[in-house]
Image (cartoon, rainbow, N blue to C red; front, side, top):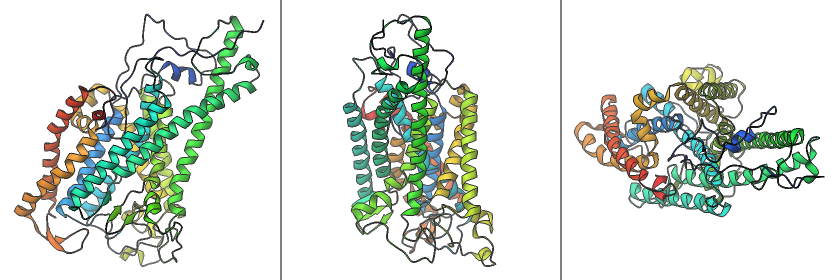
Length: 525
């Protein structure tokens, strides 16, 4: 007698607080996977069983490495913005550099070069953590008990509202910073807003197609009762099978889920690669200085703003959302892998270190074999006048990166750095991290609040400091003479004061938002 249609039943899950965006994590239960994660793990020899209802699993411990990385990136970002507010030096590792096919003839001062190179990690890291946070958020809301489980409509509305909020904040900040002269200023928030929405919709689509593919695979497997299965991997009543028949069906379900999971991961990885390469493909010159430009996009700001930087009088956007989407997709992939099973700290550390090494190799190859760069033939300093390979002429040449838009070299270099930092933070004991890096945790768990406040705090703080110790410098943007602080001691003093001011404010905000519900808009900051 054939059994009735079997399905895989998932037990009710606790509602873990999760990372909601690249800026605001509520909790990140990295080391404690759900029942669904255990079922999807590639363990073909045995099948885990759910604990009895009377013994619910303990609440997962918060993983600190993503918070620490986000907090450190906020500190690096403050370095970059402090130099802008104080007019300390030109904005870039090279004068008038870091743009697509922009010829450069002079390096920035050594301290500025090092600081700017460190700050290159920020925007990629924020966008990467954004994608990772989408996975945590989506998994937590869809693993709730049936009466509290979110529908696709609720998820989509959540992603849309957060994207709109970020866009409004970006617009208002631009109007405030420019005194109303710039109608739309995208310093990074608009890019994060769009990428957050797209990453959320992508996660929803993958969750749907992953189950459909698992069902299709299950029907092709030689074992089990695939002719009777209509809803694999979906919650529902599960009839009792016996002996080897039950075990074979369970193994088939896990194998099908695992195959589908891997296939979707491969497509996400391919998508991330394509999305960073289209920045090279869409370049009017292919990233080659001296080449005749051939426009690849229509001459309309409404279209270009999504793919390519715009610096018009009224619209200034250095971070086109689709040019940065690759980092969010990598975050989706990373989040899926982290939640796939109960990885130990050593495994997470080793995995991040290997990912960092992989991206490092890609970066080295872009330099040696001249692919994926938007700065080919653009370095014209003294060391490049003797026919030497432009990227091998000096250390500064080797690490010169194009950020607007990011090319493959920038992508590989910054992702390598972020993975190495995650490896470092993952290797440290949680108790040590929470004590030794408490300040970074405070910044990292109130990051959007930090971002908004630090812009205006710098604007206020820079006025008396420039008045006291400022001297004539060249404005980084207008190139006109202006008062500024180019002394390193004055620069670092201002930066330190800024961080000291922000620490108690971020602590206060952290306590404030924890008093709100898990779905409160205040958690987003």
